[in-house]
Image (cartoon, rainbow, N blue to C red):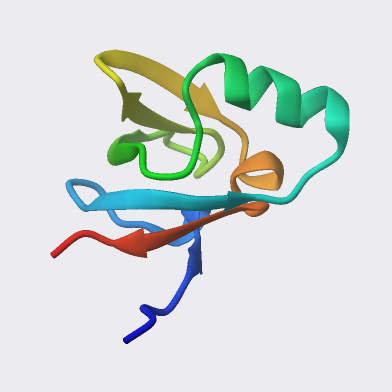
Length: 80
């Protein structure tokens, strides 16, 4: 059964998700792929800035801040 996909920026702090698609312009997509944002990567939302943008995510052992604009084009599924 196929799981529902959500935009990354909708995730709550402490939730773990799995990347399934990155649908953004090529310049940003290349950067996201370079930091390990590929299909199957586990990500955890760790922090949200006081004003709500950007959010900080734990990706392959690194803490990376991603703006909501960019995170909205990253589709993820909830980890069991």
